[in-house]
Image 1 (tube, helix red, strand yellow):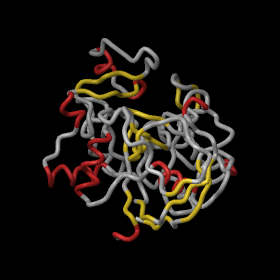
Image 2 (tube, one colour):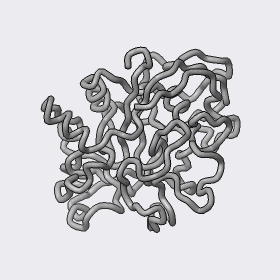
Image 3 (tube, helix red, strand yellow):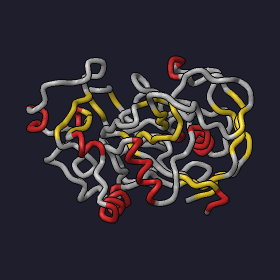
Length: 282
């Protein structure tokens, strides 16, 4: 874990790319210092947790989870009879879970250093409790994402590919039809495959979405807040950072100010998490 220094930073943006997501207004926020894991929780780490506790994820209990059509085998696709109307590339796949990311004919044997997938918010919370850690608040996550920079789109600055270099695992090409994989990956990448941000955090955008502890809301005050934790209740939880499926033409959410949401029991083939710890407990 690395120390994220406490202090003031500017959260959100006054130039939202997706206004409906509640990216604005830009507002001063103070967060106390905290420790954050340098990378997303991996399959290896989650496997150790399951071996120790016998935990069964919600995707395993439900019997299916959502997977991007473009990474499924033909045999799996033949068995599917439904899709998400607003996003037909999302398919409910029987047997898809953290151990079988693309369904029963897939496994994580050669992906132990990749981020764990198909983990719901509830699953992530249980994992964090097992380690005596917790999920970051949205404010903590965004402070960590910015890496000490202010008024920048990405954790490293305003240019997506400085000097032609890829800084995150994102979609290149025509979404959802063709991923050219110019960054080297069609699906998830091993953690720490791209340069870290100014705080030493890897994959803070791209690769997989990351759960935060906050309930979702889209109306924010412009007044300064101290260690905000979001609404007291809600129906969805905030996720941040975007994933390997994000492309500017459809899901321009790999910016630090960007955000999205899912119900706490949701899981998918591009959704994971990382944990944090208050500095006084380390």
